[in-house]
Length: 331
Image (cartoon, rainbow, N blue to C red; front, side, top):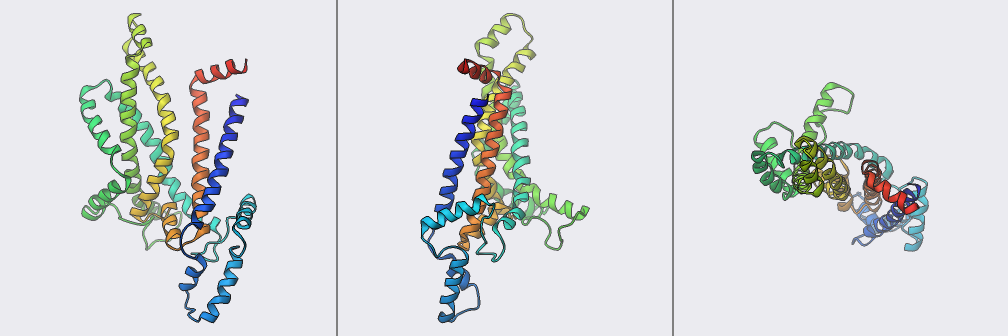
């Protein structure tokens, strides 16, 4: 087990290093000058005044040194927990800006990932042994999983927010409220959260339901299922074993789908104007804010790596065959 986890940690650390390097490189290949873009938003129009201000801000953001030096400085600051200052929201630190947006993104991602995975697996397992449910879930599942996150978000916003007026169409809470621990503010949070959550849940639910339905059918035709049936084992017991075995590939699929779900959440936030990392990334790109873009991507990379590592641990705990393989290898 120690050797297994040491190898996993080494792989994740290497992945983190490569991801951070790409995260630093990508914004610098974007056209334009972030400092000049920031100065154009000010009321300064005198070229003689812009030149020294541009030199000053280049020094503040560390853009007045060669790229290799910027790269080393980035790692040095990152290891100290400093991700720089936002160009768009100057002089706000990037860390503070991101920490304000992260709770909104996590409030969408965690419930939608866990609930869609659980509900999809349960409904898919039921559809594998109930014909009427299979005839409805399978076509619906294919339709949902083939639907882009942005499209279903637009449909939900148009139908339930604009036409029906049941839910608000944009924002994280009502614009006439201030964040507080009141019941009114919490109710506003839930109303603004529901449609972005529902769009993520529906797309992911369809994929999990189809996957579990197909895996259950495959497991029920396996040799061990036929052997148990020949021994006279109850059908319910056979299905329970089939469900447990079918659940293992779904755990692996959850690790593989995390990146897709995160990307879907970012797009959904943009559609609904939800104040999470997705909207923050869009604003950072529009304002050529290198440092905010790097910080947002870094939080996403760290979150996906941690989630995958947790799933690896859960897989080892759930599947005894992995521990048997480790023991055999060590011996």
